[in-house]
Amino acid sequence: MRLSRFAILGVAVSAMVGCSESSNGPITPNTPPLAFVRYINAVPDTLNTTVRFIDQVQYSPITFVNVAFRGLGQGSYQPTEAGARKFRVFTYSADVSAAGNTNILVDTTITFEAGKYYTLLHLGYARAGSTPKQRIVSITDVFPATPAGIAFRAIHAGLDVGNVDIYATPTTTDVIAGAPLFANVALNTVSAYLARATGAFAARVTAAGSTTAVISTAAPVGTAGSASVDPLGGATIAGSIITAIAFPASPANSAGTRFTTPGVAYFVDKQPPRTTPNP
Image (cartoon, rainbow, N blue to C red):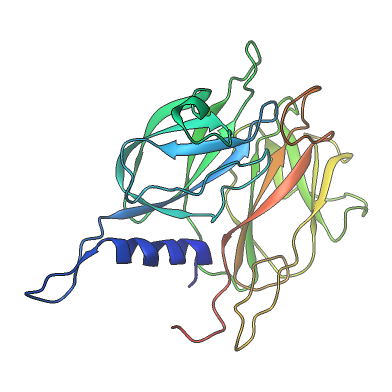
C-alpha cells in the first residue's frame, strides 16, 4: 500500500539525513521513531499561514509555508520525530528574519505517536472578538484497509454554517434525494470513512434536514496508473482514500486568499496501490 508520495520521499530523505558513516564499520541508521503530519488552513479571515516547529530542526516539517485558506501544507504528510513537539503558526511573511516572525496565531505543543498519521486542522477566526477563535484541531488519521472501490470521509469546518447533511450525487446539478451519506454533522466533526464504488460524484452539503444544497463540489476523478506512472487518487481510481472538508466563505475585507461562498475541498489521504515496480 502506498501513502502520499511526498511522505514516502520525506521518509527517505530523513533516513539519509539520519545515517552516520564510520571509517571503522558500515553505515548505521539513526532515524528516530517518526509520526507523519500534515497541515490544512481553515482560517478564513487572515493572511496565508506558515507553521514552524521551534523545538528542533531535524525531523521537523519544513514545508508548511505560505499556506492559503482551504490549502494543504506543501508535501502532504511530513515525517516528524514522535513525542511532544512544540510549534507555532504565523501569518506568512516573506521576511525570514526574526522581524518576519512576530505575528503568532498559535503557540502549542502536541504529542505525536510513532507510526501514526495526523491532520493539523487550523480552524476558526483570527480577528479579535470573532468566535470561534482560531486554534489547532489535531486529528489522528486512521486509514481503512485499501478499498475495492474508494473510501471517503467528511470534515465539517464550515464556520457559521450550522449542522449539515452531506449527500453524494453523480454531478453538482442532480436532484438531491434519499438518505444523506452523513447526517446532522456538527462543526469540527470528523466522520468515519465510508466505502463507495468507484465513479464520479459531487459532495452536496445542505442544512440539516434540507435537500437544498448550499455547497456543491465535484470530487477529483484521479488518474489511472500504468507500468511507468503510478496512479493519482480520485473518485474513479480504485484504492483511493479521500477526505472532503467543508469550508466557510471568507468574511468581508478578509486578507489573503478569499472565497465569496462556502465550498468543499478534497484531499487524498492515501494514494491507490502503485502500478510501477518498486525502486
